Amino acid sequence: MRKLFSFLLSFLLVVMIGSYAEALTFTFSDQDYLGGASWGTMDITVMNASTLQVWYSATSAPTIPAGSQVTGFGFTFNPEATLPNAVGNPADGKFSNDLNDLDWIKLENLNAIPNPANGDEFNPEIKKFDYVFGVTEGQANTINPPGIFAGQSDVFELTFSGLDLTSIDLSMFVSLTGIRLQSLPSNINGGSLFLVGKPDDDTPLSQVPEPGTLLLLGAGLIGLLGFGRKLRK
Image (cartoon, rainbow, N blue to C red):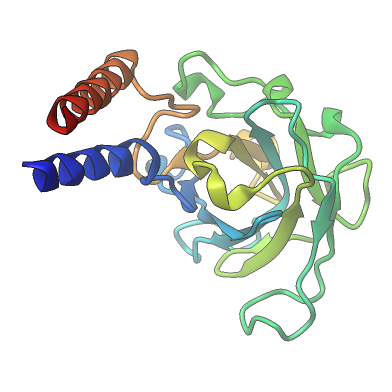
């Protein structure tokens, strides 16, 4: 019986604390353009205790216009006061499909992020001021080409201080992602877009565990602890 208790207690603890996400994938689409097809995907991975790797892969033409470029990124973390202290680029040649000519840096002027074209697809609606950190290429105060063209991919790193990223749930930590698209045909929102990222598994943004689920798990843990005490008497 005690072995059964130990197994159940261990299982419940794993469910409560052991299912943290260490990698996330976001897609970027707008129901008003491309028939709702995705412009690309962003993979965010925990590299070590202080570093996230962000890899963006643009969809190939002709699904998206061949001349389109992703020229910047937006992020919000949980809590909002948490900001990266550095944006890094991998050494040239480290990845075969990395664009060595692009130099991603922190965006100092968040006003350069426009209102998301697909912000109205979320509830509540997501606005430009919901983003607290930006990444741009080359010039810190604006977002302009060059960028990542259709069919290309590129990677950069976000470094944090005072955190242990290996011990947190990444899906709770990354609240918002976004991409800046430029050099588009003029019939697509006047030639540019900013799109909010959608979790690839359709999980709602900034999802928190349901209170009822937490209460149920907590009650189960308390019950098992009480049962264990009875076994020891």
